Length: 240
Picture 1 (spheres, rainbow, N blue to C red):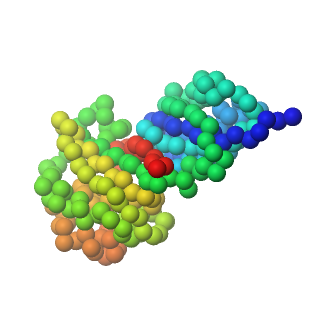
Picture 2 (cartoon, helix red, strand yellow):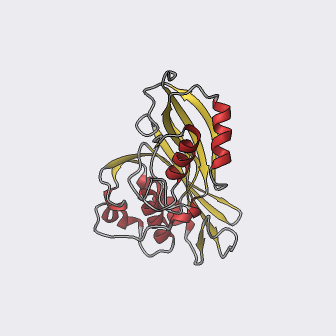
């Protein structure tokens, strides 16, 4: 006889360098696949987990959220310890808790926060976790352009495959020693939308395009190259 079904929420940190993204792919190592494999070892059956969103190959997470259902009354502290003992060292279950049955990691989310990190100059140690900026940037131009991306806008032409509008709630930049850190929060993100926006920011900083070009970029008349994945981090998912 099984115990009543329980909905379990986990918060996950992972180094995206060794993964082909979040979503399960045949014959490729993914974060979802790594955790599902560990759950199968523990419960001796397949258990599907649902993430708050997909991250691409090379993208990192500090606060990815997922949920799954179990029907065994295993103590959650023990389950967390077992998962962390089975999964690789580049993925870690930071917290685990029981949530209402109607909680959905993706559809219950109110907003998500991403960071994109750049380092000014060469950095052999940080090159897998930041974008190396090897050219002058006009930071004032970048700061001036940021407000033009805040609000409800159609980001179809700054994404890949996805279409539609997103409401960017916050978007800012800070400089910390030799690093530039962009932080962006929105109710939803289209696929590669953040990398598309940061690609525009970099081109504005390099003065390859101007602020006047942003409207043309949003309507697809001008295309900019996406920023590479290694500088991108999913920081937090908000549910309130």
